[in-house]
Length: 328
Image (cartoon, rainbow, N blue to C red):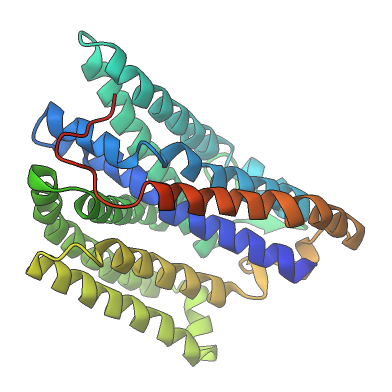
């Protein structure tokens, strides 16, 4: 049961990062579109799936609360402020998505809300990952870092890096889903985003060496971890080649593989810890009776149905949007 729910938590977080990541990226690219027609087509590219993508954030939070309540109890006070800002950004983004089409006079305001919500949500998620990788101040199972204990320079750098990554995979999505000027726009911004992401990875690795990040020691202990970055480098190669040749068939897959390689690297570096390096998965798990109770409800029905719904939506709305399509 513990391994099942740990795998479920990792899987739901990965799906959220991949799926909501690209539509947050589209929101961050939104102000750089060439005009209102292209902005409407950007929204049309994500409108069938964007709200369903956020379902996996709910699944992740519910799994953490039910299966690993000790982690939930530590992380909530540690990230009160950033989580509030992230949720506010997601709410603002969702409202703006629907309201911008209902007005002309104040469309600029809702556009600004859509863009700001996308940037805030992405940046906060990156900061949270950076803070967890660096390690939170925890004593006797209690967070003791204060309201801004998460806001280290390394965490803030990770926040900026995730914004770049989301924007890149968002560009991959709209390029693969569109034709004409929007496709050209995607191919135009991808080289800059790829270069920026590669530069970020170099800078964050140097910063990790300078501050002697504990997770780096795991790479010495577990040389097999180097396979994950190699997969990521291969995905970068596919992405760069696709952009160079103007081929959009594998853009999103290559971008997703980059995120998968990064996620797998971190997860494998942390094991057996769920909060590095202070709390193991076994220590954080709820009692076996609670895990079994969750399994017979959420494990057998809710999770498979949510996954089936996600697969069905992406299958139904597969293919490119037409040049005349726009979100209304």
